[in-house]
Length: 583
Image 1 (cartoon, rainbow, N blue to C red):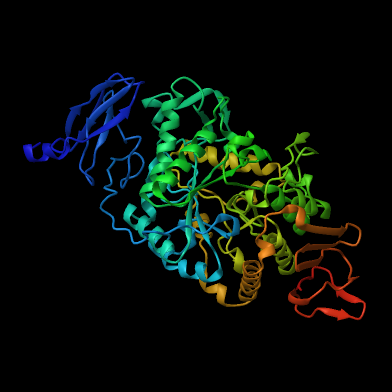
Image 2 (cartoon, rainbow, N blue to C red):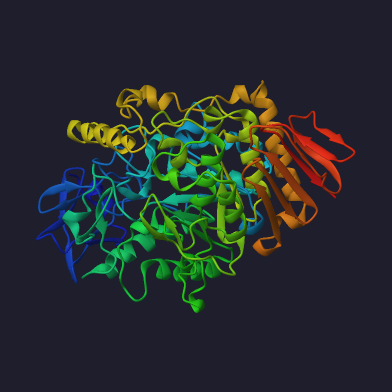
């Protein structure tokens, strides 16, 4: 290697720090040159920092490995790493502040299937549509580099490096910048409870994982054992990178119920504290949203009140209650749901199971939400999980009638929660959202296929009905077809969603998180449901026969079917009809 080339990793004086207490010898390799690392103590090594854009490997006892904190993996998760000069990008969003989440509308999307191109640039071109629709926050499914060309992103292994199939780091920044230009906040789904199995070299570097606990996806992250402070720092620094260097406005934390953490000050609490401090430094609000199936309000309760202090959490109870009622499915975890009373409990109490006995779990589940605002929960009819974790990835409109799907949407938007919709839901997209992955390791591919079949057995789905998750066609079938949103029956569904979004945005009472101000009545036998929030009243008939009900005050502003029969004594609702009045 020439002297000029050698200077590329040494002239600046910058160093990379590599925490590798499990290694005997650490070095950096670039362009065939090997430079030993300096032992900095406490399991840390310092190596000369390559220039941004220069390929390099960390040599771990002679083995080539990507840098655990690699900022860019253009050659895949097993290939050479690169640094990114985050100061080189010129941002245009100076002074941008994301809209308040409390009055927001979140739109979850997957970059790889949101458009035919599956890139940040192509997704950015669709952002004006989302802004016009009334979306306030775009939530991206995970972007950390994972093996193969396509996947959901929950098997990421290079957490600091955006997945190269979607575009470059600068193209991701341009996506965020464009969203901010349109007034949209941008949230990112991050996975800190496990890493994927393919390309995960962290255990060779240090005790990132513990064998004291196990998760459904692999070894549990070491959040409370020996050397866990370094492990926590790794994940908190990762959160800081997305929020600071890529200007994300918040993070969605995947499956926090899988965090194995018995420490007095949990990782969740520490992450919340440090992200709040970062927001103060950056002078812009940053939010943390947890996914949890614990129905535990401590996640969103303030630290002073004994909680973890996160801003909000996904609430599956409303989804499960709606799904079971609308589709009449009762298999798997849906066996706990299906009554109109479940909708009433979800709307009023936040959780359906807030200390109730769960037949599916065969134990009492959850605890009451208490006085907390409904804004601490996200409410939804569909998510990537609840669509994609079906055998064929069916959306709600494929499982029930268009009329019943509209009832579900209306209940989400009248609920006192922060509403969220999943890409294409608003026009009842005809494309499924299947589970897909691109594993080249045959043993892993076989395990994934078998695991999906075994998982679906609990729902009574036949193995032959499950698309091959490793087939490219399964991925391609999940790509949205944007042209269909302009033709029937999709256009009328889009118009219905647009009307719901406008109604919510223009009605202060619908933006109020006070759950004690919502009135819910129902009749299990006849199948009707009435929800009133301030001047807005929703009537829906989920029964088998037409029902006559008193007309609410005001005028009917939205109905499906549109031919609503009002008479002197009130209104007749036919099966699967719904209508909204505003006084």
